[in-house]
Image (cartoon, rainbow, N blue to C red; front, side, top):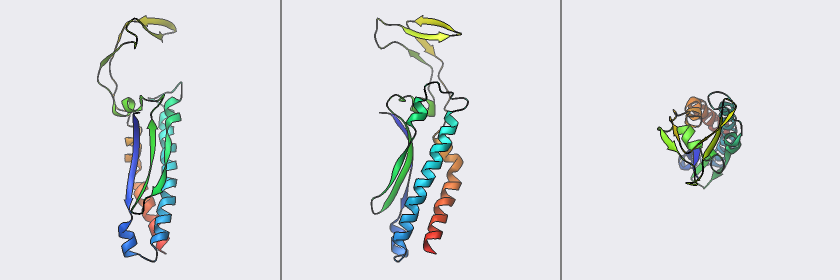
Length: 161
């Protein structure tokens, strides 16, 4: 399964050492805020997938965008947003782009069938021109990095009050 994943980790060991009385509150606040950040990122990614240049007819890609539940293993808080896999296997190719390549049917005796200008067209193979990266995942993370950091910092500040 090929999935695109936005993920970050917060090292909570330093917080536990410096703020023993507030450590649990800080960890809880960071987990709650990470969940909120993940939901916001998911919404922003879905917004990108509904407009140009990725217009969807099937909504398979947008249906694959999911929040990875936030967990705490005792030393790190993990959470993220993931897209792709299953019927939206192509997420990686949209995110990272592709080089020009030949597309052929899975069955060597088969043909490719698709619509062009309202007409059904059949071909033994097609030369795909490639596509530029759309960066709907990495771009969303980069665009929101400062807000994410500020949000996590404010969660810590609120927790230690």
